Image (tube, rainbow, N blue to C red; front, side):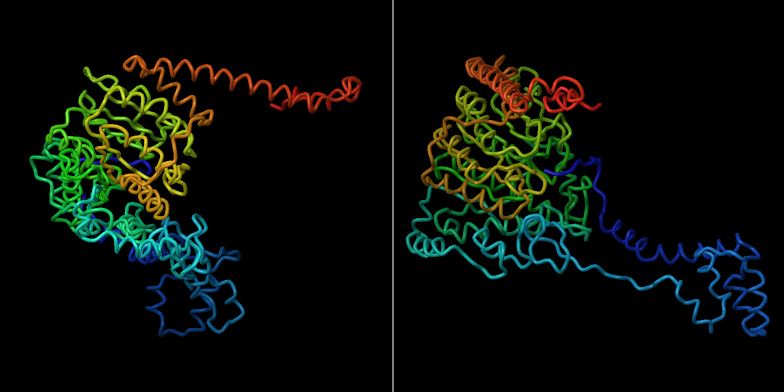
Length: 579
């Protein structure tokens, strides 16, 4: 979810650190300048008088004193020498004022995009990165607000539908709804206190934008019912995390600002927000598995899939998906499937269930040979100590991965393994930072892609599905994608599963690598592996044919091969390469 962090073993008090840095920032420059002037005068000796000498002799004959200063000055002076000895020059000599350094501080006005947090100059009205307007209405009306205008421009059809849906979906019908949403405004109090040069990507506006989109669409409140929030108990947390980790998180209640890692912050409300998020996920899992509701969406923060047994990292404090999985098992589920499509590997979830055969963890994420945060999640990480095969990693080798590669991986890896596992309960760790336009994920999954993946997973475990929000830092992408997923939970029609999905070459190679490793534990993958091997061979043949065709296009006349035309012939046919 973020650039690489350095884990620390204890919480640091951000308030003290901030005060010290404030003093250094505002006082250090004056002290340094004073010290440098004093050292400069001492070191140069007879080059020029110090400020103390000037003050002591201020009542003496100024003409004689000025003359003596000019005598002691060297013939050639640098600008630094002139600046340190500016009192040695005549005050009435106005011609020498041209070189004096400018003391005025020019302040560059800038603003941070509400949608993607990127910085822009004040005279620009549309974000240079995402195109969102400077005065965007996305926090009031979600992704239905126009990105190009400060005026709110809701889609007329959606506005009319909202009015009809609010009339149809009364409070009585909402109490009998089939989809539940877990949300509490107190989770918005979790925020970064220390003012830095750039807004933190994991910010309360993420939930505000999603909630505004659901409200504008008439989905929530309306079609979905609300699960009341509660703090997770200590006993429930101890099933996932160590006592030391829980105590360290609780300690932040007493601190105005603190950090677990350089990018994982906490304030005095963070522990409460994390416990509310975990409690909502646990109660949603219990309600879904017991049949009180059909499915649910946990609109929660802080996220959780990086939080392991003993550490908080990657914006995550408590592992919400892990808490939900164990709550479902406590309610009677024997086998739980967790599919994590966040663009970052859920190292915390994998660690918690690494030796557990009753929980199957499947993750699709950018990996790039371990260079992408958090560096874990290679295809060779399959589980340990008897649980081999119950951890499935699909590590993309590059950025820019889109719908086709994800759906292709679902068709050939995720669904075949999940169907064989036959889960009683399914959880999606739904990070939307692989969505198009996300500043951290830099991938290309669209709301239609998330719709298709959700639909495919809803066919498992009798439709008992819980979606838990993880990452996602472009407000327009995260709100439109989350809304699309919730519409699938509500049973809205979805396009049929595409059959002839053509993956990228890198995506095909990744899926082949995963199949080769995992078919040792899931033999039903062998047929798919053989078919894809043939497809890969066909790609290689087509590539060679294209190369030959390209050479034939540039085939020159035969007489060009001789004499002075030989070099040009080699260049055109691609046989000549500069090293």
